[in-house]
Amino acid sequence: MGLQECAGRLVGNWHLRGISGGEKKRLCIGLEILTQPPLLFLDEPTSGLDSAAAFFIVQTLKQMATDGNKTIISSIHQPSSEVFALFDDLYLLSGGETVYFGDAKLATEFFREVGLPCPSRRNPSDHFLRCTNSDFDRVNATLKGSMKTSCRMFGESSSDPLLNLATAEIKAMLVERYKTSDYAEMAKREITRIANLEGKTMEFNKGSLASCWKQLKTLVRRSITNMSRDIGYYWLRIVIYIVVSLCVGSVYFDVGTGYTAILARASCGSFISGFMTFMSIGGFPSFVEEIKVFYHERKSGHYGVAVYILSNFLSSLPFLVAVSLATATITYFMVKFQKDFPHYAYFTISIYTGISVVESIMMIVASLVPNFLMGIITGAGIMGIIMMTAGFFRTLRDLPKVLWRYPISYVNYGAWLLQGNYKNDFIGSTFDPLITGDAKLSGEFILQDTFGISTSHSKWLDLLAAAIILLVYRLLFFFILKTKERLSPLMWKLNAKASTLQQWRKASFKERKSSFVARKASREPMALQEGMGSPLP
Image (cartoon, rainbow, N blue to C red; front, side, top):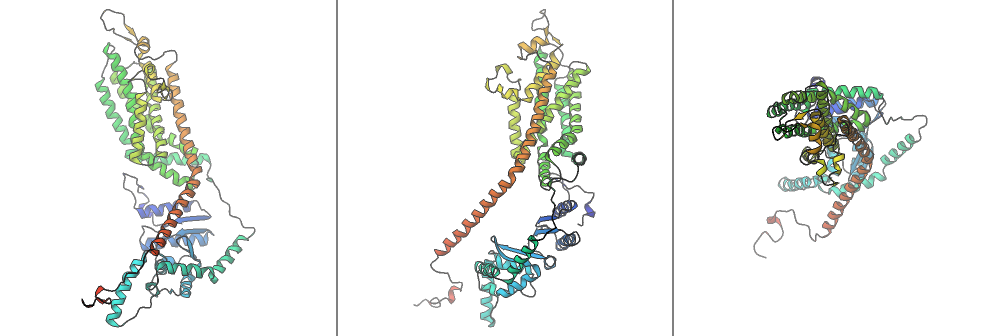
């Protein structure tokens, strides 16, 4: 495939320059060949390649088809004469109708019999295209005008049938002649012979031949390698998290346990559990690229949906743990929350859970809205609703019961994490009263009276509820991918029908338009038209 020179280079993505477009195409073909499929479909494998690279690609495919006893079907755009000579059979279509189907080497003979011989120095594929593509009508009209001028000047005549017939007429003639030709009969006999073969069956495997463990191990290793190489995937986000954590720690540095510290601690906890997890939507462009790769590889049956989702979770685990540890360590000890390890561990796990939930939400958005701008806007809108109903801007008990309190606040991971963080910080702490000399305020009293948070259940139950929401989002992601996979054939059929109907309407419109023309305009210069040589009648 000629990929030795770029073997150590990155493929590239939306922000990282990698290999060229032609190298990417050859890489995709190579990936499909590695699976050793008995039947291989290729859509314009030589597009974007120079003539030499295109020839070597098709030559490799030809050798694989011959030596490996495989069937390779390829659509190809304007192949060179050398590339065209490598094909065994040719299926030529025009407007959805069969112009020729049979031995590729006999195609020129068929066109010659119809009265459209291929010139000796012309590429056969270019000749076929000129005969069947209506875009060449304008070219032929221009050439026809030039030939008329040449004929007047030098007394020559043109015998090229392409200049005397419209493409629609040539196409209709080819279609009708092929239906009754010996080439069509030969093709029918060959199809009948193949259909009646006995004892030879072709086995197709719908899934991957590798075990689930092998698939998972390979995907995790590849994803970790990809994430570690791509600066914008996690490394840049880790740096931003560290910078923002330092800012938060400096703003709320050693906030203390005074009366004013009650609101300050609540604000700090809300910012960390809300906005710090909100920043995870920055990974949306990478999610979109990953989803595209998944769709491509899933169509080839390389691995299953469940394996992909699990591998994504495992491969992102070390990076999200690093983000959570960095954020929790900086903010926890700069703000000086409760000084013991269990509270610090809970704080770290809470941040990790929140970031994981946001990533799950953005992956769902990426599977439904595969567009950078629209996806980020959609994700930001979802996160805005989550932050608004989390319980800080307005306590949960004061939210309107219809819709916002029931059910949104109960399916809002931010509400559960915020309650858990408040309990983690306030329970066991005491704060100075508003009036000096009054009794100190307990954290439990502040939670119930000020923030309307019940202390009847443990903070670990709040964390468990957020973890369940994380699991539900992953299952929802799985359901969406499976549903899209099952509906894709139906959507393809609907799109094909719509495209066919549109082409039919265009064709019928052209026919109606031509019937309205009462007189064909002359292509002769006005000075040569009858009655125009003199101003007198």
